[in-house]
Image 1: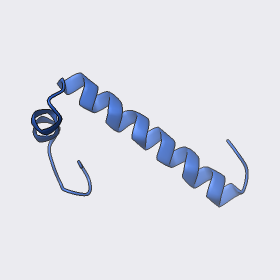
Image 2: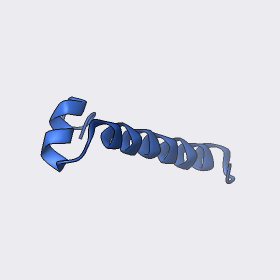
Image 3: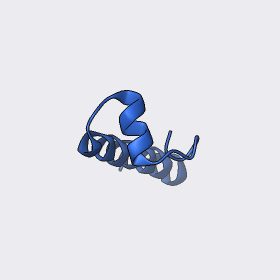
Length: 47
């Protein structure tokens, strides 16, 4: 939502009805997962 829909953390917080720290944590976890997937695809092995 943040990058695809260009929403602020506050907008996401209101939409999902969760706390600001929960939004930040979810974004952080999603980013980590994407990095892991990218590295696996790019380097051809699990990191």
